[in-house]
Amino acid sequence: MITNVLVMIEGASNSLLFAQAAKSLGLHPIILSADPAQYDYLAAEGIEAIRVNTDNLEALIHACYQLRSAYNIAGITSSRESFYAAAGKLCQHFGLPGPNPTSIERCCDKFTQRQILAEAGVPMPAYHLAVNATDVKRSAARIGLPVIVKPAVGIGSDGVRLCCDIDELAEHTHYLLGGKYIWQSSPRILVEEFAEGPHYSIEMMGNVVIGIAAADFGPPPHFVCREYIQPALLTDDEHKLISEVSLSCLQALGLGWGPKNIDLRWTKRGPVVIEVNPRLAGTPAPQLVQLAYGVDLVTEHIKLVIGRRSDLTKRHSLTAAARILVPDRDGTLDWIKGESRAAALPGVAEVKLYVGTKSPIVRRGDSQDRIGYVIAASPSLVQTEAILQRAVDLIDWSIKPFPTL
Image (cartoon, rainbow, N blue to C red; front, side, top):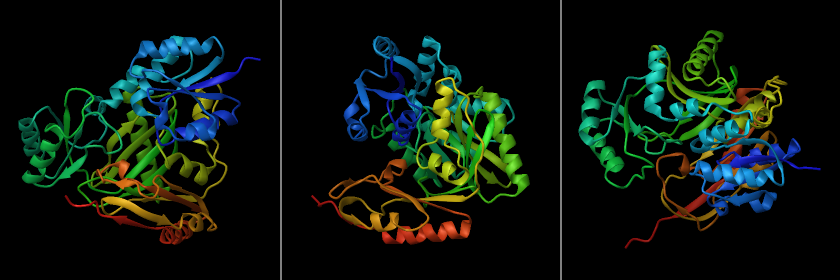
């Protein structure tokens, strides 16, 4: 009997969930990666990996043809945004269900995304594109400080900073253009108005809004999320308006297939779209949706990938929340403890640590600053927050400063 495989290109924070969901659907997951050793869970989970230049589409096509000599490729996907368009191209090449790669590529370029959404009348912050320090300074003057300055292509708040004055603007511009920031292509910077107000993260599948979470960030100038609550506490009118704006984004960008994640803020003029992510959100978003509603977004996504109908029926209604563990200093992690006690608390669904003792801690001001998370769920927001706080209070760590030279 020929084995049905799910081909995954590279990995992300939720790629282990993808592999586990694939197995639950009777599929054999195989990951194509330029460096399989970076994924420490492969051996533990018995996931097959093939080394290939994942930046080369022809190399990926060749690898898939080789796989087809021994397996039936049931579907191809990626949990990492930067390879999602390539997955879509492979799906087109092999006649498999998948996203429109052109729509994905246009969406991943935040400036192009902004242009398309602006033409469709979607509410957004004022923005300008800059390619040098003079452009950045001129753009900030046009918009008015404070502004958000970020790379036009990127994820996880990498290189994103709030600049409140000229000095901060110059400092961050120098960081982006002075050789410290690593660009994958020619430097292109987006300078945006700072949209102030509560932040919401919308999870969608096809044209259906599955859940709207409230997101709380750490102190500026960076945007490192500290907590998610699913569902967000919204009025019916707020929920309706956020849903309508989200759907208008998908229509404008041609993103009708599969999962999407949209970030927006509720400002004085209502919902303002921060960005549209043309793929499933990373951890812990899928876990929160499953705990809150009983909808497994990862499994339902894979069903679409292999040509099956997804089931988005909500089976219950709980409040789920995640607290992200973020260090307050750089140095060497001397010890970390309490995670097992936290995980044993009633109502705690998951405790995950990304680091071990003696790990170097170097904060970047982006999503890579996370050293772990705790997820809890219960029938009420008050109860969930109380469980989450008790669990977090049980986890402690010590960071030794790096030696001074």
